[in-house]
Image 1 (cartoon, rainbow, N blue to C red):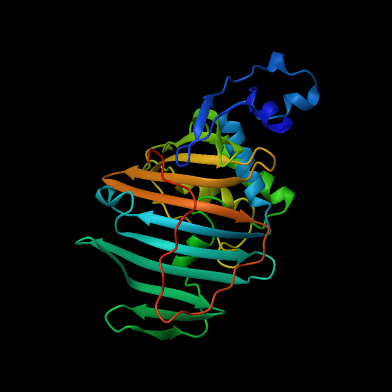
Image 2: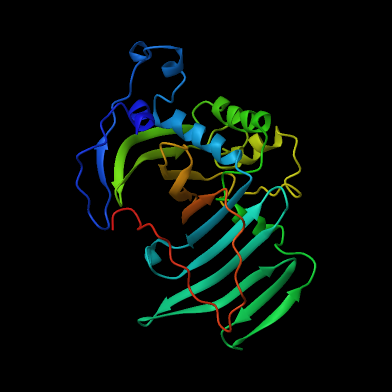
Length: 302
């Protein structure tokens, strides 16, 4: 855990554990004078810097598997009606998995109202009212709007070192866009993680409308990749603010879990994501009736 201590400037031993809630300790941000050598000086010193570094590491990954929940109304959060998405994508082979369900919770009951699954390039739909699957497309799955689910709606994967530096560097150059609100070390199931609190704040350029999450899409354009063939798109509206809680593996600096709360102009959207990087894209057999995937991390505050 030497890397964790270097990142956080704090000890990681001797902590107790709780089954659901992660124990935490605040992090003191080191100043440049605390760096003992040139290598220490290059290590992330605050939440914003570590967040950008984790975005860079995420961007370098050739494949990703995710389990996601997406809430469109605050009154349903957590555990109420929501979208549940199991996805996987290999940026090298374009192998894809996308299983999206609308989960409805009402009257003390929980059920899948509808589901859509990608099987190769075919799209299968399930409607609870009909109780069966139907092929809707045999050539284009996922659809362009659904490509946002192949990563976490802000980050990307499959980039070269140069492209990742461009993407993250451009985001870092938008002064005031990304702000670190807090950084702490937490322990979950015996393993320590770095918990980051990040705010994405819309910026106004000239007399135009303020742009928040949309600047991630703008930063991606500087890689000169085609966002259709190298799939990248946002779940958030371009002008929205986003409050992020992101748990980082201190050894890889990759995210393991995040919550992204989108707000602005009456909008409230909560997106929860559990990550797995580097593994082959998961496979599943079309069931008679779709189940409901569960995230292995509990929502914050529960």
